[in-house]
Length: 361
View 1 (cartoon, one colour):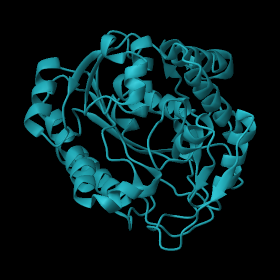
View 2 (cartoon, one colour):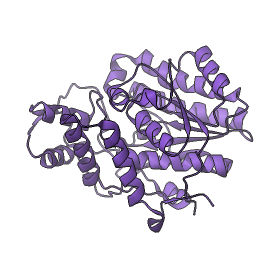
View 3 (tube, helix red, strand yellow):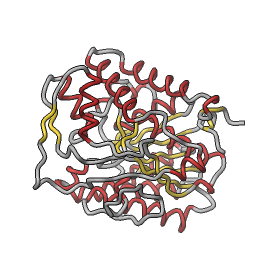
View 4 (cartoon, helix red, strand yellow):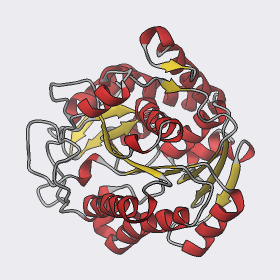
């Protein structure tokens, strides 16, 4: 079974779109630690990007993935070995307010990334982050598999399904034999440093820090909750295999949590309050609210069998890590050190003895 190739990124140039966002910042920090030369291309920096001083640690370029000319220039002038495409409009509720922006960013933006990469002689691997919501909603009680039908009623889900189709088309039509392409599908990724509106744990910890009641839209909804480092561990592992092994790891990959039993929004909120040490929540369910999937689960047997991937943290541990980060933030700690300590602990917890991290042989 493949091990995590810790040396796969050492000395490599890695382009990360959306590097100023929540997952993009964490990934850039981790890649930097692994010895990669990170080139970031994204819109204006987010809170986390600024808090950790990432601009001083990587090559930072500000731009929009909808601008093919600018994106192509970045690719041509930096000659990356690998690309992680994270740039997206990632909020479901915002997709109802701005559907055109959502489709142009998520669908056309992905096409632009693939087109810019197609012209590059240096790129060997592309990892495109989509979502668990790219599947057609069948209200199943079991987890969606990678070969299940794509779809999506809301603009966000549909735009990500379109991104999946674009990746598959480019892979089969233009990139096969030259560039290995994988799409990665995660559930609700949680962790410190996510300040996005209309997301459960960011809303929770904003309210807790400000000593306000947590407003909860859909307390009975079920989501596959996954800590950001567990998600990125999967992304890094697949990218490492694309770089070192090649096309046999191309295709789509689900990454989900341990929990086979359903974990509801209400349970997440109540444990966040318990972990924080104080707080309360209010049920603000609205019958006229934009539609979102009520039950959504992922089957990640493929990643377990073919990548030897599994998450390190259960949902309670993921909340504990997130609460710890926000407590450090609330006390104005050094957030770069806080992030690096969490990454270091994750690597140590997933040492070769546990079959996770190992140097490439």
